[in-house]
Structure formats: C-alpha cells, structure tokens
Image 1: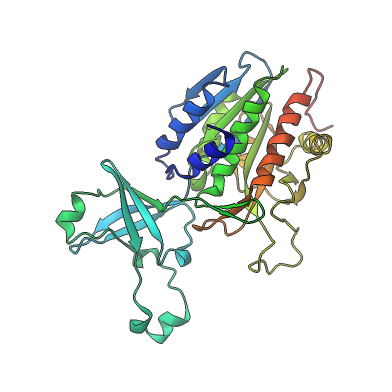
Image 2: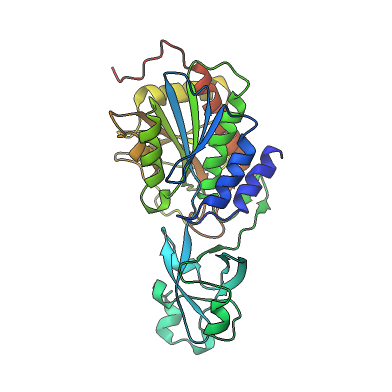
Length: 352
C-alpha cells in the first residue's frame, strides 16, 4: 500500500469518538514494517515507536477519532434519533447520507428534513440547529425491524467517501484529523531508515473531539521531552471567511507552525529551520491562548513538555465536505522528518 492509498484507507475507515478500533487496526497493520515497537494502551491509543530505548523521547500526535452521531432512540415507525459525538454542526446534517456502524455491519441511512412545501415561513428563513429534531431514516418499516439492524448506542458517521478536486485538493469527512494522523505516521516511516539520536513516538490518539483525552493519557505514559500535535486548522481562502484581520491561511501554501504560550520557542525555531532546509513553505499561526488540539494537554503532562503544533489548512471543518491539500501534507512530513533528524545530544529545549 503506497502513501496515498494509506491516506484514502484512513478516510474510508470509520472512527467515531470512543469507537476507534477499526482505524487503529489499519495503523497497526501499516506501521508494523517500519516500527521497532507498537503498543495499544488501555485507553485505545496506538503508540508506534522508533528507537524506544533512547532516553530522550519525541512524541508526534495525530488524533484518529472523528465527529459522529450516536443512536439514542428508535421511534415506533423505525426512525433513529441521535445525539452528537463531538462538535457536530447541525446546520449541515439535513439531507446528508450517513452510515450507522452496527455489530452486524454498516447500515446505510440518510438524515431527512421536512419538505420546503410544508415548512412554515419561520422554518424556511433559518436552519433549525436543534439536534433533538434530527432523525436518521434507514428505510425500516417499524421499530421492530429497525431494532433487528441497529442498537441504541450505535454510532453513525457521514458516508465515508473521498473526492479529489483540482489543484491537488482532497475532500472527505474526517480529514479532521486523519490528515494529521497520516502526517505523524508518514514522518515515522520517513525516519525509519535514519539514525536518530532520540526515540520517536508517533501516536494515534483517541477521543480528541471530546476533550483531548487520548493525548492526556498517552503523553503521561510516554513522558516525552518534546510533543508536537498535528491537526487541521481553519483555512481562510474561501468566501466563508469574513475576518479580514485574521492571520491568512491558504490551502497549498504549507502547514502552519504555531507561536504563543502553547508553543516552546526552541521547537518553534527548529521547525522553521527545518522548513527552510527542506525548502518547504509554512504559514504563521499565532495564538494568545492554549490551543484547541492535543498540544494543549501534552504541554502540561507530568513535569511539562516542549510542545508545538503543526496545522494542516482545512476548509469547511466539521462538515462532510472538508477540504485539504495533498501538498500541505507532503510539506508537513518533510518539515517534521527534518526536525526529528536535526536533534542532537546537545539540543536543549529549555526556554532560556
């Protein structure tokens, strides 16, 4: 399986928050030929390591979980009512194709909506952002038939498909954060034939979408000196961007490198040096507060970690049509591989 096929496999594999086992199996199978060790912890994180006996440890985190829905009620007519798993945008749900992931296998469904002909003027004027009014239609005749296929607690995702657009762009549900996961694992693959002075840990973290939980537990157990989260970040190059004073972020112009209180200044400088050395473009990402990704919790694990974050520009985040650039993934892997390779026994990450 080549790298592109690996990415597509990740995007076509369900990983609802709290039920990430199918995608973790893909990770273990793909990375066993490159890693010195692979472990799955009790939380469900998959920890892939190179040179694990080294005293100094570098952690790359990409979360494998994706936003989803959970079945909470089945009506007498066989329709499924749901709750949100993670930050669901209810406004994009109506008319979406979904897949309910059951013990017996995937069940196709769709999210219905009252026809415009029957809507009141108030309903036409605004989207009803109420998850309690969202239902999934799986074509069941009644509750008894639906219960033969679906159980309360089953998760549903947007239909998992990949669409390639012009200019090296890719669209799919779950690019948040399967592209970050892909970059973490590809970086380890690229480093597997190099002589490293550190132990490298690429971690497929779980439950980021409900509170950065997998990064919390895996960072505690690994106890890294440096921890870098690779996640998506909001792209500004589309008509939905109305903040003209925000820092620009464009697809294809390279990943972002963070700065601010959640970023270790030595790591930041070394990442930028790595970008220059590999002739890989990057974009600034200043933040005055702790980040909303795994770097947030990694930084304060145990006695503290030299943290940073690499961002993959993403249009339409948390919808079924997220868009990223293949080029930004390529640049991110080059930057991170060079960064890891550049660490020597004398490298001091303490801010001085």
